[in-house]
Length: 308
Image 1 (cartoon, rainbow, N blue to C red):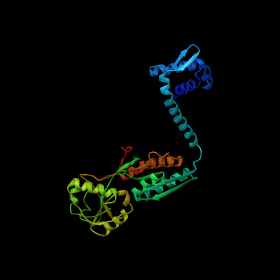
Image 2 (cartoon, helix red, strand yellow):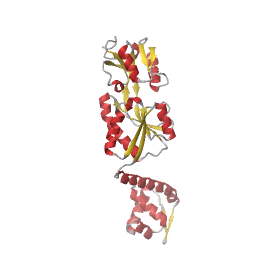
Image 3 (cartoon, rainbow, N blue to C red):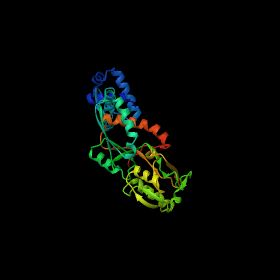
Image 4 (cartoon, rainbow, N blue to C red):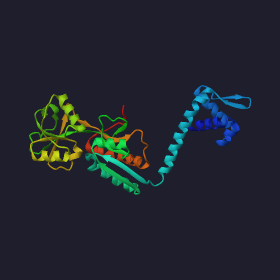
């Protein structure tokens, strides 16, 4: 069944007259009749009854009618959006991003977006993941760039990649020369970690429990930059995403395994909120730029998921 079948069906349902319906959709009466028969054969039941010169809808036709109207309305709205997409974008897009992404990735996206759409105003807010979720719920943000939420609720999460966390230490740290470490080897090892209010910290705690390890948490800091700075100045390790400390010269990164701590960054939208054209365009650019970002980080692409 094709879109034209729905248009012919609705035209005939609206007039119950083959001649007037054919004129409405600009085809001959025989063409309309043939297309309606094709539709009925595909469905395996009649949609109209021909009683003399009268045309009546069957129960099946009545049941299909509201669904056909909605389907065609959605298609027409989509086509209208595509036609508008050829015109210059205007308006505003409001994005919440966590610190990690706001360092390099988001500025790169904004620069590329404004080259293509100079008449759109872009507002970026650097926020914690919980604040991004609140902004989406309250309607002050169009979408967020953050890590997978523990309880997404009615937020739709679209993964971009899966990123491994690694141990970051100074060049003179005893573990700096290791090519790889098992999580259990960090038992009683001095570490600086994010506070327990961060989802990343809670994920790391689960990894340590799974490995049967209890690290010696000598400090807690709420920014990765401060953790990396401490690791450079003291024989203390930090567990971070490589992308967050790329600019820190002198740090050594050691991959972790058994288990490998993984974070999943991606896009967050509110399921019930209609997305604006600027938000759709910015998200599309962000997805494209995430592909080379995946290659640079040595990360793995993610797969889109919605909350269960």
